[in-house]
Image (cartoon, rainbow, N blue to C red; front, side):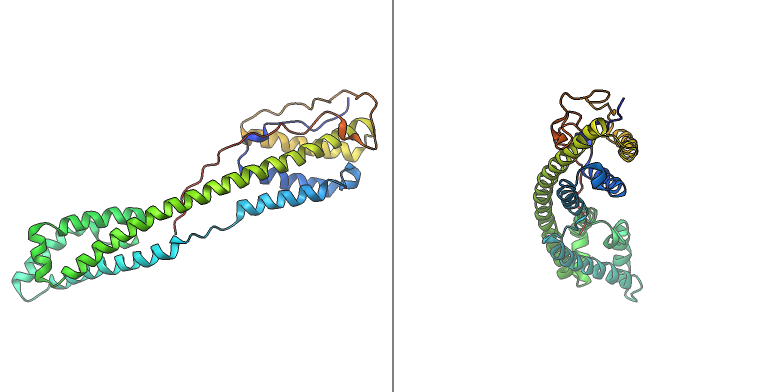
Length: 277
């Protein structure tokens, strides 16, 4: 009974898993050599397509809003830092009225110390809470007494600007993700189809012109298929040609035989988050 490359649900793989599968397959092909596997006319196109998918997965994404958000956040950090620093200084003021006002207000704002080191969206919410406290009537009077009214307004404006820019970033990332998903799914379909064609040729030659090298290659591939089937959460089946000899096999052109290496892929959905600038 001729050994055949087994099938598995390739459509269930993530893009990253798909890259791993094809990269490993190409390594096995290189070791055995395309000539022994009778796929000389198919390997270069397959290798190129697999490389495109790998580059798509590994590429760095730069967003237009990143430097803008960083600049606004720096203004926000300076404003909140100036307010907190000034209050700390007035806590040791020789003017008792100012010292007591500063102590009380510093205590009210104690929960917001160090917020400049927090993640962007969390910091936005925290600055909103800080401003809510500063907007209390008795605190507005204290802020005016310390000459910090302009710094509070600068903090308010920077926080509003940052929130607006963050909304733009969400739309920017969403658009980039949609484009990446479409591109990666199309590439996955193409490279999987090329692999399917190659597996079909190798399976056909394993029947009509077997060799120890082809047999060894198929053994390694079936190990890979089994491992990737576990990752994809699918079972690995058997090739439709296993144990069968096609009628009128054509060793010069075995592409017409059955026994493809994979199913036709469906679209998958790879979860991705919004990158931090």
